[in-house]
Image (cartoon, rainbow, N blue to C red; front, side, top):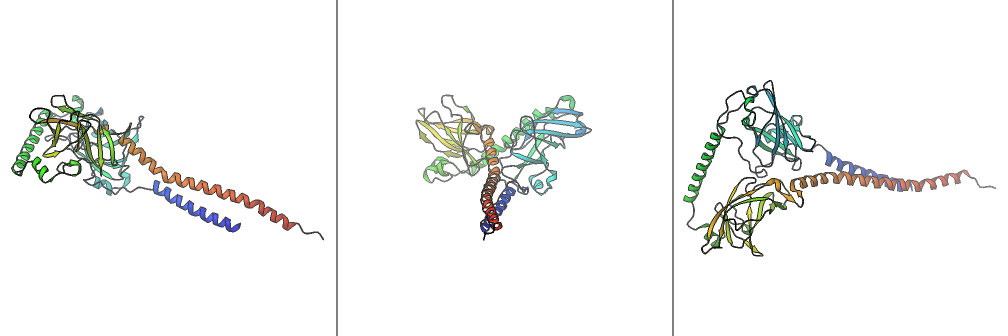
Length: 401
């Protein structure tokens, strides 16, 4: 029986050590040295416009203001910002749309990875459970580097934010502001000129065969399922699988349309969409110079296309055969990232919930094993006590002569 007790104890110690290691792995100090690569980051957009001049805290009247903030990433949406100015110093409380970032750091992602964790800005939950961060603001109308640490990916993501001076009350700014509308018009014209120059260059280098002929004769430039390789799908921080996404559709006569919501497909972290037309009279779609062929089901044309950008208008072309002569029609699509859902739940909320469940699996399993071992040990202990007591009582009693 003593051997049995020793065996149980040794087994219990091993199980306890394993459970402690599992718990430490789940709740131990995480590493903050990893930086998301360019391939892992969502497409970045520029903040502000050319011609903006930085405005320091000394040029703003002391007070607290609601301020608009631009972000370079659709994955880092700022729902609300409150700016406080006092004695030439500015700070802001940012409220993000999601709860995926544990820390912020005022600087680049690379700087954050090398910095001491004491310099990280930890989130604070407000009364609605949303994450808020209190950060210093160097200047208005100036791009500011801000890194965000993902709780799920355990990596730093580089972002840029810009606090818009024009969103403050007019009397709050002590210096003249530029004509923002004129700056935006100039920036738009500059982008259009750049696009024209790019189109001209593409046209000059275009091969003799049209994209359609090249597809029919060689199949070059097209991936599995008819998805072209020329348009790069956007990165999305979701697990691979299928989701629903809401889209806006504009263009054409209105007789044909693309159904919403559509099916969003995440493959190796990149976004693709399955578009279902209300009509079967579309034999191809174009995005840029790429041509996409349909799969017709139940009298409707269905296409699979990459999603290069969220929350911005995306120009596509559909070639309709409904009329006597087939012709191309231009359409605009907008895919709303915040609308991505899995069942009745936001996909990003679902992913975060699943990540929390995974974190708790090992500690719960370890605790369960420990409790089972304690139960077995106590049960065996109770069995040995009566036997030992009986042996002692027998020894005390001497046989009568």
